[in-house]
Length: 152
Image (cartoon, rainbow, N blue to C red; front, side):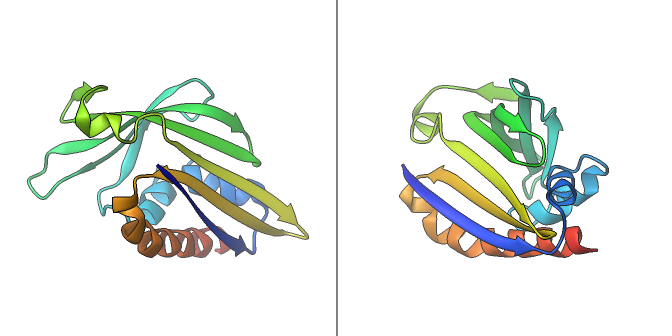
C-alpha cells in the first residue's frame, strides 16, 4: 500500500471543522462532503475510540455496501484515525479474502491544526496504487466541499 496525503486550510476553528467533518451536530454535513466519493455516502456507528463504524452508500441498484472500520483513535478537534478491516456487502460483513486482504489494516488519519482561527486539515490514507488517480482527483474536491461547509 501507498500512503497518500492531502491538506487544505479552512477559515474556521478546529472544533467547527471537526464537528462538520464528522457530522456530529448534523449527519448531513458528513453526507454532503463525502458525496464527492459517493452521492449516497453516510456512516452508521460511533466516532468513539474503539468503536465499529460502517462507511456506507448504495449502488445504482440500491444495494447497500461499504467499509467495515474501527475508530483506532479520536482526540476531539485534533486527530482521528480510522482502521479499515472489512467490506460491507448488503448487510453481510466480509473481513477476509482477496478483496479485503489487499487493503485490510489500512489507516485513514485526519489531523486538525488550528492557528489564528485557520485550521489546516491533513488527510493521510493508505491505499493500493490502483486507486491513486481516483483519490488524487476526488480528495481535493471533498476537502473543498468540507471547507465550504465549515466556513458557513
